[in-house]
Image (cartoon, rainbow, N blue to C red; front, side, top):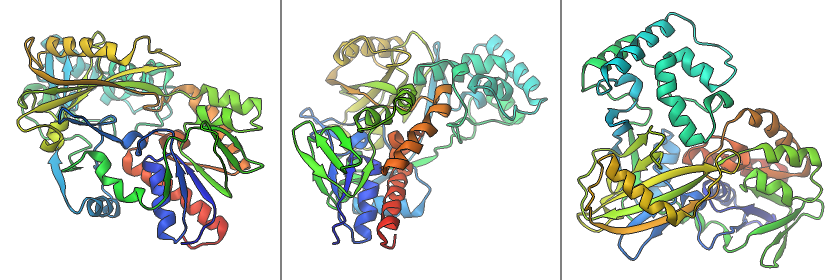
Length: 441
């Protein structure tokens, strides 16, 4: 294995993608992570209660055969292949996902107005260059549905109003139904599945991190190493524990607003641009229940603004082995952001409100037997695609290119990346380094 003195910062999906690709090219790497555990956002936590929760909901729904085969091989073919059933909760109504094609359970007046608005919107061309996300939503769905559903959910999830967001992040995430689908979805309770995630895979044993464990063996991994300074001229990384490491090539998945202030010589305009980049903070509240029959859904979106959580996922639906036999589990996501909705309570303070709101929506009973509770703080959850991002991001990336720091992953590229996309981002970063040192990628 050739030693080219390559340092990777972060042991999440993108960092491991970089390490895997370098290893395949016969090049070694050293990896450093601030946490006492590997995996970043794809970490898994097994509790003495017998319940297993990932660091936020993670599944593999990649359509790329190479990634599918790679992950399958990593778990020895021991994975669950499942159909996703997704629903929504809207002011007492349970609505199949996507709501725009499943209006059946909504109040008649709201349902009627959604349809009438959709008819009017369908007569016009979709705005080609919308000024913001809200303008696009109204152009596609009509004002009633747009302002009652995706704009409200988007505010809960992204913590910012839809008219302050761009549209570059969306991809296939918002389905535009045909007129026939809208009408049929309003009349009939049963409709075809049109969600962009139809089937997915999940490791049978050990949670999502099981997919990644073999990658960890392809690099020299050092945990409990939090970066405090990077000197791109001296090519040196300094850690909080006092360790200093030299590098020839540096690949970083550190969130850009955290990374830039640590890099020696960062100009003020670059620091200012990095400070404008925003992401959400998420508190996940994890509950283990004594039964597994409380929902048909794999995950659920919550639209009500007075409900503390934004999305629910159910790990026991992904693999029964995430729970003791006969038990079920709920992971509730509560979103905040430093820029728009600062977190003003401790994570544990959200456990009881989550339980209370689960009772309120009828998912669990007042006397529910709860076997496990915990809350985890995810300081960097999802990128906020506010209007500041489009101007600030190129400034940051251009300077990092100049000083030779290769940025990868959701928080390096500052994009809406799913797990397989983050892995491929790491591979791209590794290929860039291999090109520089003249090793075939």
